[in-house]
Image (cartoon, rainbow, N blue to C red; front, side):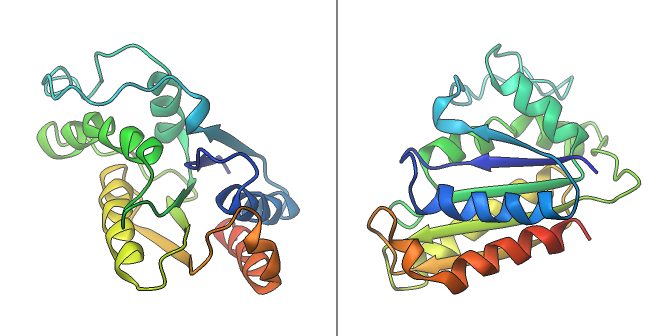
Length: 189
C-alpha cells in the first residue's frame, strides 16, 4: 500500500508535526512505509491560473509540485495535516491544493480521474488550532474535502483539535496523540 503524508505547518516540532508523527507511527506499526512531504521546505509556487493544465491535466509550472503530483497519482492513502490559520488551512497546504487544479482538469474536463487501484483511496485529515469555536475546523475541512475529492479520494476521516495553540501544547493531551496513532493504523486496514 502506498501512503503519503503532507506536513502543512511552518512551525518545526509544533502540534501539527507531533500529531502527524503519531499517525505515521500508526501506519508504520501496521507494516507500511510513509513518504512525508514537508510543504514548508518545498519549492511550490502558487497556481497561476494560466490554463496550462486544461488540455493535458498536467501543470506546466516546473517545481517541487511535480514530485507531489506523481506521489498523489500513485497513493492509496493520503494524510493531510495543517494548523488552522484565520479559520483555514495554512498557506503551505493551500498552495499545494491550489496546484491540484491539474487533477481537477484531468477529472472533470478530460474525464480521466485517478484510478482507484487495488486498495482503493482513502484520506486522513488532521487539523489543530487555537480557536475554540468550530469555524476554523469547518472552513479547513471544506477545503480539504474539495482536495480529497479532486484527487479521487472518496472518503476520509477528520481529526480536529481546537483550543491548542502554544508549541508543544498537544503533548498535554495524550488522548489526542493516541487518537492520531489509531487513526493512522485504521487508515491502512
